[in-house]
Each structure stands twice: as C-alpha cells, then as structure tokens.
Image 1 (cartoon, rainbow, N blue to C red):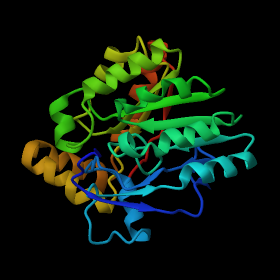
Image 2 (image 1 turned 135 degrees about the vertical axis):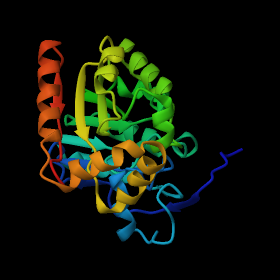
Image 3 (image 1 turned 180 degrees about the horizontal axis):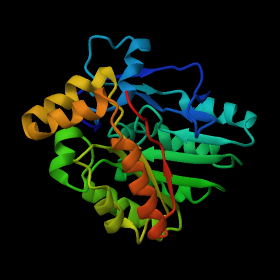
Length: 276
C-alpha cells in the first residue's frame, strides 16, 4: 500500500535532470522533485512556483515526481567528467515521497560511477537507506541542514520537516560509515539560532560546517515576521533594524563564526547574504 500524502502529488516527465547551476559552489544541480513537503516557511525555493504551474498551491502543498529522472541522469551524467553536482538545491531529495517512488535512489544508482564531486542536501534520515549506494561514490559529501538545535524552534519554522534528533542521528550514522558529513547551519535566524550549540553537540561526527544566514526574500518576509510577532515580539524591531537599515549585524556574526571555528580547529565555509 502506498503512503498517504497530505499534498497534491503528480507524476511528470521532465526533459532534462542534470542542469547547469548558477550557485557559486555548484556546477550542476539535480532535483528529483518539484516542490517539497517540508514546507519550511523561510524556504527560498518557493520561487519555482513561477515556472511550474503551481500558482494556486501554497509551498509545501504540492510535489511533482520526475518519474523519468533516473533514465535521464544515466544519459546526461556521461557528459560530465568534473565539477560539483548538487542534489537537492530546490527540493529535499529524501522528502517523504522518496520512500515510495525512490527517484533519488535510482538516480544515485545510475550516476555512482561519476568522477565529479557529488553533494547531497537533505534534512531527512531516509538517506540512511542508501548507505550502500553512497559508499560507491568516489567523491561524495552529505550535508544535513539545521536552523536550530531546539525542536520547538524547528516546529515554528519547519513544522513538517524531520526532527532535529533524527538529523543528528543521521550525521552519526553516516560518519560511522566513513561518509563525509557536513552540517549546514542554515538559515541562521538572528538572535534565535544557537549556532555554537549546534557545533558543540555535533563536532565529534561532523567533518565540515557550512553557515548561511537567513536571506529575507520578499516571498518569505510575511511568514518570518508572522512567527516573530507571535512568538518573539521582542525581536521584531531587531529584525527590521538588521534587514532594513545599514546594520553590521551579519558582518559581526561572520567574524564571530570565523574566530570560533579557527580557535576550535573546525573546517568551515560561510555563505552569507549581506543586507536585503
């Protein structure tokens, strides 16, 4: 029996699956699905609605399954001999529908011989299902994202996403299996995300940390301020100062992160968006 989904689910045929990327740290991207059931209220990826005929659905209410993606990946990967391929730039490749459709798993089966570096971004422990495949890659890293070590904060901003405890366990299991682990501290919510705590509780099994601050896109501004006004009213004016004036907040934070990581001998990358 298939899974029960509280979203609009549709199988589609795509024309291509390995596409050139405009991201600074990726040459190509693979997105097995359109949409994401996590429905995180800060997610920048909701911009894809402009191009996918989902104007009437809210982000998190629909997922299109690229049912022919594995076959396309097998053909298209042959043209790529180097660079970085990111799987999951605008969707979570291991969201709940992957349990049934296995599009991501089939893609991995068909590209495991690639000599390019492969980065997989996810919040889900379902990736542990595919450890057998992950071990076949020559150059692979798995990035698990987290905006807070606090489950109650997670519930406010990422209500339908996997629990923080399961993400930490996923990093542990990947590390035990000698798979390179990255903890993507993203987004850093000003005055809310305890990024030092995230590092301190995971540093024994994380190989590298990536840090990204909240980019307050116009499409998510209402969502974020809605949470602030309801749960953190004392931070509303602070956020307005940070995002709508010439604040040095993120410059100072970036310097704090660099100093902390260097003093703690932690490998890191910072992907900050400064200003609005």
